[in-house]
Amino acid sequence: MYVFVCQTTSLVLLLRYSKTVNSEKYLSSTAVVTAEFLKGIVCIFLVWLENDRSINRVILVINEEIYNKPHDTMRLARLSGLYAIQNNLLFIALSYLNTATYQVTYQSKILTTALFSVFILNKKIEKRQWFSLFMLAIGVALVTWPTSDESNKRLTAQNQATWLQQMMGFCAVLVSAVTSGFAGVYFEQILKTGPTSVWVRNIQLAIFGTIFGLLIVFCFDYKAIMDKGFFQGYTTIVWIVIFLQAIGGLIIAIVIKYADSIIKGFATSLSILLSSVISFFVLHDFTPILFFYIGTMCVLTATFLYGWKRKPKVTSSVNDQPCI
Image (cartoon, rainbow, N blue to C red; front, side):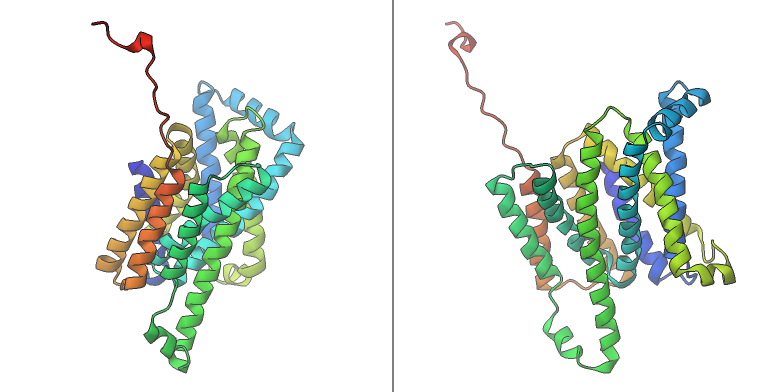
């Protein structure tokens, strides 16, 4: 759990730092491609460990699971396209929003994940969970609600650009939450339809994620790359962000496999709190207001409530009672 908290908190804080404080400007689209490529290398290494450190077995597994199963591979290709869009939106959102606001707003993916689970996986949502989703929506709305001062400043030309950038950040987060919800449910459906290792699935995602990422690079940043190169503006901070982005999906997979949703809820809540504190005291780009406090409490409560499960009552029988 603590690894997940550190990875999530460090990623959003360092990404925000790299896009706002760092003097060197880099292309977000190239960072996404590099992260996908690095994720593929890490997963190949993990498959190598699973197969007794035999390169021949790794080649055999990849050939069997990827090349000889074109239908499954194409399903992962569609999923990779969604992840490529989602990862690029992550960089856009943190370019315009502080880490605390981003972290809380991005929890709306719980709502989209639940809705897609109902429609795609035919899951049943309990009344408690529906109430937590309603509370989550209220909390996100309160966090994104502007103050009266901001509302008055919108009409001035000086602050209009800043307001538009914040709206772009919020839109990027909401679209990312939708793609995250659908992609998460779709990936869960794929994982449950066969015995293929999660690392092999991530290799498939990395391959097509790199391809889709390169298409985005070619469409939006081709001229900039021709002028200054693919790795322009890359610093140590940027490379750390790329590494954290690459291992993020793998850490989540481990958390889901070996823990439960309650542990993940605890980790998410701790990450939000840490991000808020560091954003306020270190980055100085965040001044909390009353709406933010109330909204954050709603989101944290909703996160716990949605993942909380009642323990079944243990009924004692006659044979279980001690002899007198």
